[in-house]
Length: 326
Figure 1 (cartoon, rainbow, N blue to C red):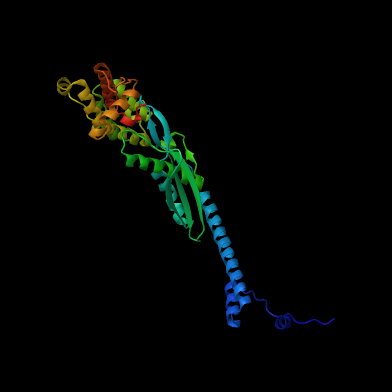
Figure 2: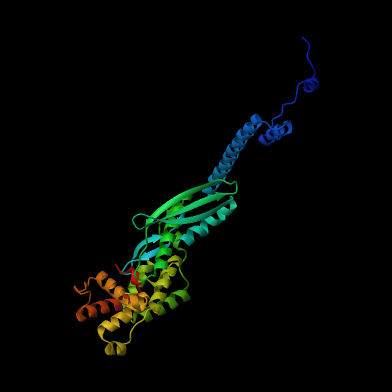
């Protein structure tokens, strides 16, 4: 049985070639356009779109898997204070989340875009769409109740609702895990001696010697002394302290000269930062939250106004925000 040398086999066996879809389309054009070739061209175009879509989807999935491998849990270090200076809960802000994931999105060829719409029941739906350099995209929706605070303008409430929905939609899209642990690793090192001394001086000035109010600031910081406050909690205390320092505190002379209802209106307006035409609504809203119900004609008695004013002053001294009062 005779055999051929390997190089001779190569010369007599035809080389295998594979035509791409664009090559096939070009070949059809060169042979002339007919009714049959037009239909073939349509079929080839449909096939090309399907192939391109599959290729883009595969590229998206591959880069998305690599991105997910690098997505680490995000520390929920922002706190929601309670009325008595404690911590009601923790969360990670939209800025915290975006700051963590933006470098990864850019690294793997992704970008995100958002759209917002209202749905039945006074709720807001936000859709986050993840775009990939391949051309493939994927969307995720989140619907939440509209944020409402009497101290905010309608635009501020709209912004708060939008940020909340965007935060959850983005976390759902990327499978982000929020870490709610409050150990020292998340809260950082303790503040410096100079920062602790300055903070203690400012807190005592705002509390006007009331040690119970000073203790509330320490409780908010999760520390027994100012020198033990950690970096993450320090920022929270500073935010509360700055609000308290900016809040109006009527002088004794003003309290004597002004009727109690007028003083209450001035105090609530400055604290809640509402325009004059919304002061009455803010006063009644706050009164109801602290357990004082208006009379049938929608007014407070002088005695009720006095109690509400005393409570408002105490809350302001404690560094609480108007909207944080339950």
